[in-house]
Length: 490
Ligand code: NAD
Image (cartoon, rainbow, N blue to C red):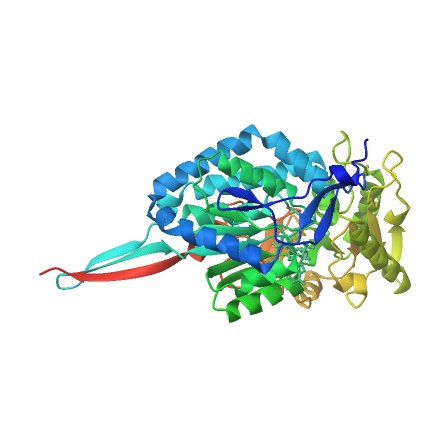
């Protein structure tokens, strides 16, 4: 594998008003291929003046885009879908190169992104209002949904192609114009997406992209001409964005971090379930907001669950996600690997039983990659750091309990409530669990309870700040205001 010399590394531009524009900054963030360790791009850390330029372009484009009939707006999205299908493998490869997840995982995420575009193509139906004649003699009332204006989204590193698609197609299908800030760690997928939008006959200024970090985020929160902000990332930043942007009078949906509990009842069909349980913990190297983190076997399920988890972790092949047969790629960066390693060290220091130690994993042909093997701890308590914090890496913490009630109480004691799963053959247990879980995405014999694009996506408690979740009907609702007209004709 060749190393790109620093002079070959491309500095990314912003996409503003239909053109690629150099950011007004002298600061850059190095983008790495996590499997190799090479620098593959430089993200400009844009400034508030770059955000302002993007917002102005979006505001200029808004009146004509809003006046474009909704079925014609949908035609752009049909073209975008065709472009994404035609470049499907290329998009997946970019995701793997900048993020590290395996090509299969990358393909799955691009497919999910395309599904969002497909659902947003239904805007002519989804965006409809309601009406009633004769609310009084000769008086009619009707409700229409109207776009808000300029809206913005801020994305995390873990799904570079997919997460922006939770927002952009819904925002523009409903007639808004859009400003996106991708994660500075993974800006390359969205650069490709802007190229595909250009080929989809999207008018200039309807979608804009500003690369950067916290200065861009804060400028988006503060900008007086942005009407709504969608955020996905860690809980502290989600809370910050929610508070700052609502304080500036904006509508906000801020999806935060997670600590997901996977409960295994003694009557679970483990033979058929262990594959999806393992995938929940180690898929995308544990860097999913829906990843299992706490494995909670009940009663006699403990021994079998633990032994199967250990065997599965040991069997997982770690390596470069572009290579065939690899089950788990690297984590996003050297810094993040160090962070996950420090959690493993804390687990050991605080008395958890380390059954499989991912720190020992080496990938011979990728000596500079940010690899970490699957790790299994047993006898974890919620009072331990690893039993409480979001690790966001391939670490499974087994926390055995005696009853379903105890498992539910354990789960409810945690401030995060994004997703959770139960494995059982009992309809009654599954019903109790789903009914009492605080998390808003619940899996029953499902490892990763990810709602499809036509359902709402988002958690509860410290995993979500706002009212309306991402995509589905909530997405349409979030990006529109309802106007009621009451009329009488003499
Ligand atoms: P992050 O919070 O570090 O970054 C998210 C975005 O916020 C990035 O665009 C980043 O540039 C920006 N940012 C970072 N620090 C900031 C600060 N101090 N001020 C202003 N902006 C800042 O998150 P991440 O590490 O990129 O992503 C991982 C996190 O995202 C995990 O906690 C994961 O659970 C969460 N996540 C949640 C969901 C969900 O649906 N709830 C989905 C995906 C990821």
